Image (tube, rainbow, N blue to C red; front, side):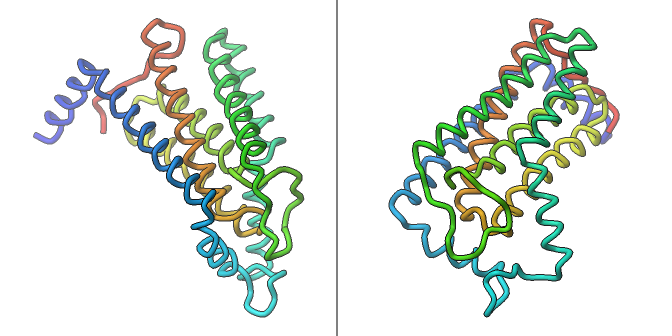
Amino acid sequence: MNHHRQSDLISWSRRHVEMTSLVLMGIIVAAGWALAELVDEVVEGSTRNLDRDILLLLRTPGDLSNPIGPPWLEEMGRDFTALGGVAVLTLTTVVVAVFFLLRHRWTSMLYILVAVGGGILISGFAKEFFDRPRPDLVPHGSIVHTASFPSGHSMMAAVTYLSLGVLIARVQPRRMLKIYTLAVAVLLAVCVGVSRVFMGVHWPTDVAAGWLAGGAWAMICLLVARNLARHGHVETEVLDDTP
């Protein structure tokens, strides 16, 4: 009986593809609203105490130069933060773009380049516009040169890993594989953002803004991908009745 219900649900979703688009638009609007509210609070200075408390919570009492936990945890933080760095994300994007190029999927290649490139432009513009100083309460565990808001590492990790995750999930036949792929993408973005606060180079609200902006941009790109798929330019999503 369960299997028949799942089959009916999948069949219904195939006939009502626009419903999924509406859900995605709802997510985009919700993320945009949350981001606007967060920006307003940050500009007014309402988040200052919360940012400070969370940042200090991740430091050893009496020694603000030392993050909490054993030395290997700090090393792990550096490893995670590197996953959102320019070099790693650029290499990942180029490798995937070349993969689609070799498969002669020109639109898929262009899609990932535009998604990541657009995210970089949005992040850079936002940093210049808000020009928020980096945290000065604790020593930085990573070299930084740009403004603090929003977190570029968090935003670009969300954009890159979610965009890649969506492309991979779309061609997986089983729902569990789709869920697993997207869960890994989300986990990577979360780890990068948390590591930025742990390393003392970002306020928590910088990271939250990066996640919201990156997630919203990735969902916008997903809507575009779904439209391209209907015209045969991007791989059509594979749906299977197998749980």
